[in-house]
Amino acid sequence: MNDRGNKIMARLQTQMAMQDARIRSDPLPYLQEAHRMVSEAHALLGELEWILGGHTTFDLIMEIAPIMEPIDFNGEALLRISEARKMIREFQA
Image (cartoon, rainbow, N blue to C red):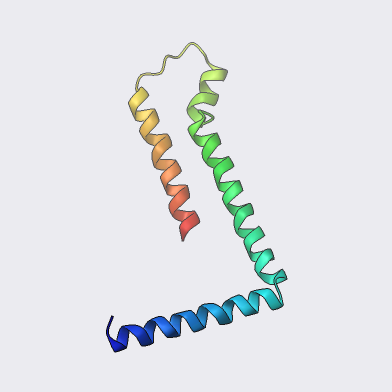
């Protein structure tokens, strides 16, 4: 590695050590942020499970009027997947 690369690596290691020291000195804010992020991820996964599990408007209509037959299984699956992807994109933003 050249001299510039060594300087960058040394600076990154210093920044990591400083961040580690900040976390060790007062871990509560970091734990609270981690808890918030895990809670959001858990809620997102619950919503994704609900969407992908077949609990959509289409399924609710089928429960109300079971006489109807679903026509487009692939379209329904694509709709569920697109909704799941939309939720993931919103979560990542």
